[in-house]
Image (cartoon, rainbow, N blue to C red):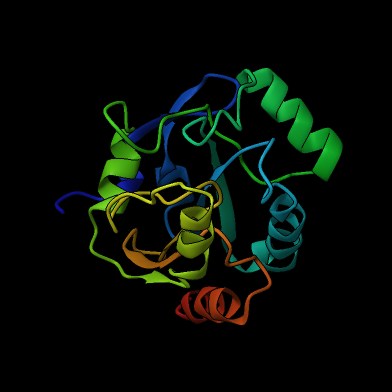
Length: 182
């Protein structure tokens, strides 16, 4: 893909137009999130990871999406209230977008077409299949809480399946590796 994911226009949860360039030079974990998903408790681990590593230049960027079984039906204000009151989230939350299908946001179009192999892909895909849910193409976002790690230079360096949690050694070591690049 040409271009840098940091340059793609996005909106903050309060509607302010911006880009992820305000995080240039930091290590960024982009996560599509939902409030009513079995994986929603991952907010707790993500906040803990953010708290432990933000002073070293680590940021989590959460993008709410309602693409999977209506698990994020709220407005941006409702989502922000849920995240802050239920999980004490302090990392940046952005305006709700679509992460797959015809309405897929350009950020997620670039992330999913990057060709970066998904770490941990398989167990979640099998669980969904057991419930009669197709995961779509390998490039597609499989479910809520899929994660993309962006290096300080804006390059996509890793992708993690939805059920790879924030304390998973594979994710933590990838984050630490990127942070060490200073």
